[in-house]
Image (cartoon, rainbow over all chains, first blue to last red; front, side, top):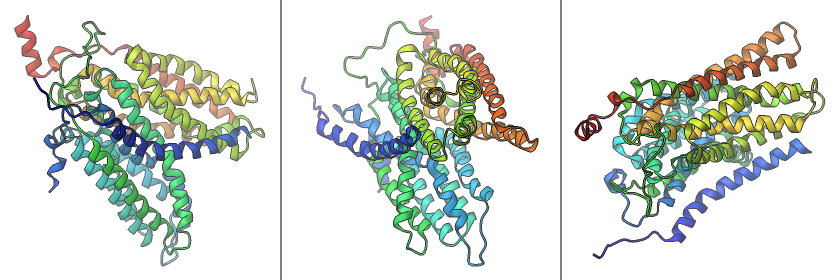
Amino acid sequence: MVTNEKKTSPILIAAAWFVVSIPAAWGVYYTLLNALKLFQ
Amino acid sequence: MLRFLDREVSVAHPGFSRWLVPPAALSIHLAIGQVYSFSIFKNPLLALKGADGAVWNLKEVGYIFSIAIAVLGLSAALFGRWLETAGPRKAMFVAATCFGSGFLVAAAGAASHSLALIYLGYGVIGGVGLGLGYISPVSTLIKWFPDRPGLATGLAIMGFGGGAMIGSPLGTRLMVFYRASAHPIAATWVTMGLLYFVFMMFGVFTIRVPQEGWKPEGWVPKATHSALISTHRVDVNAAFRSPQFWLLWVILCMNVTAGIGILEQASPMIQDLFRGHVSAAAAAGFVGVLSLFNMAGRFVWASMSDFIGRKTTYFVFFVLGVLLYLALPFTGTAHLDSVPLFVLIAGVLISMYGGGFATIPAYLKDLFGGYHVSAIHGRLLTAWSTAGIVGPLIVNGILDHYVANHLPKQQAYPVILHIMAALMVVGFIANLLVRPVAQKYWLESARSQVRVAS
């Protein structure tokens, strides 16, 4: 039997994760900078 | 025109990767998590003057956040059932529209110096966006990840913790950017409303529901599993009547109330317990450390619960919680005088606070099945609203008592932390009492299948 299955491109998956990771990483970076004040 | 929002249109095609679903959920949670950074607007709002020179006081401004959180709990409880029929895409779209437009209405309020408009915009309209946005991806994630429900919901709810980390620098920078304009706060809120709407739309367009009967490739449900993991379905109204729902309500409420005990007073607590050793800037750094533990805890504990079980995870929270809440006061200058130990213990406690939020959807799924899990989760979030009122009441009530009686404030913290330890004991007992859901609560079809089989 032939199935008409179209697999999601790994590039599309990586791009989707990129879209949400960039702002999240920006936020974590600022929080880390703030957190470092505790050890100064 | 809006037919693309319908559940039937959002059914995934064969071969669709489930790994596109967590980013969709994250885009919603990273946006609505902004609510936890609302405090950055407090001072600018206090400095705003109306045309007649009128200003708002701290209490009036504080209500904006309180209304938003209260409406979050209410809307999650009220609209959960609608979400189950409308599907996640429509619910996420409504959430994005409410959250984005809430900012715009609030901006009109800031520009016209109308607190009522800000309450309506950020508090009520935005609050509906928060409630719907919080629960909308939960059941979809659980359906896509039946093998790892804790990991999937942990990822999304971690986003809510991370949202404050984005909202705080974003809001601060935008206010600096617009400082020369006539209405810097209004301009900031308009920009944030539009940015968040667009960001949440990414989730709306990316989310898909699996086809009926879909299972991960190669995954076979375990033949034997814990008695607490159900294979039946429970309707939200039936779940609401079951003792398990209320035990989980107590579990969440106790865990959150205790966590708020630290979060609410994090900065003054470290400065009071280590007087002269920790500056205000370092205390702000401590708040940042706690945010990181909160976010990481949501992912780590929820993922771990897939392996050790939900009941065991909460068992760890409550046993470790009692010990750590009792130990925390001994790290102060009067005893061990160890700032690193204080930070480490507080960090672990806050990781369990976040972990409690992130693990509860999977616990609900275990007990009631995935059928109405978002709606049940929505109703359970009233425990969060309750904790949001009770936690600060306990902490501020005790601190006010010590200040009013001219007693050293440092002596208030052991009392507060011992009360938090007692709350953990209550949570421990509630968790201990959790048993599989009785057959009378199952959906009729599931009950008749059992009758036929027997």
